[in-house]
Image (cartoon, rainbow, N blue to C red; front, side):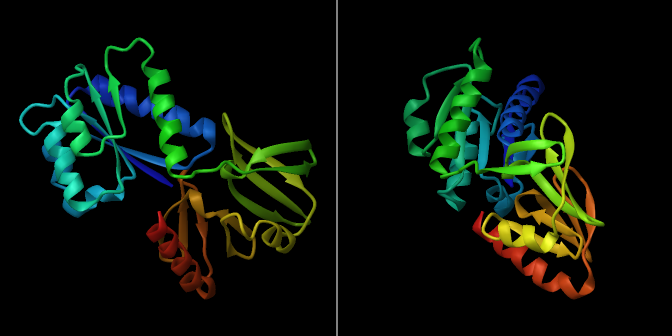
Length: 241
């Protein structure tokens, strides 16, 4: 899952960046979570929790604790976070170079949404992110879908129900066993959390006692006998990303 922060003291731009980035990630089928912050102080007050975010959009021109100071605090803790400056000015190149900013986005750019898309393209390329597609013979017809868009697969009697996030959540069915599908997707980041559920680990938002919470807030049960192994896999995955 991509964890992203947007830090800007102007509510309009916080919401605009959140909307455009969210739209981009939905189109790519990428699980994500975006948090917003209204000041540099608010963001830096998280301490080590700042580096839970893989991408941080920072307004340079915030009052008091500006984007440059915020970026310097981030870099004291991590060199791996992607920092994107959002600014109304273009005279911060040297400061941005010092904190290894990946992009500058101009607020007054009429093509701001295109700039966001280009920026996200560049970041996902640097992260070596790949969109894997696979063809399935659903009862509804043959369909090639991005595996990243599959939330989970449920076994229901003699058929499998694929929960797929496209423009909306769609359900596609095919006749097969979950055991076969688990083998087919074993190298694609799917984890068996229950006899009836095969879950895309990219869409796991959190785990609590005997339950897994997905990126669309769906909650699925985990049997006690599976919980320890599933939790270990999830913790390992979070550590890698």
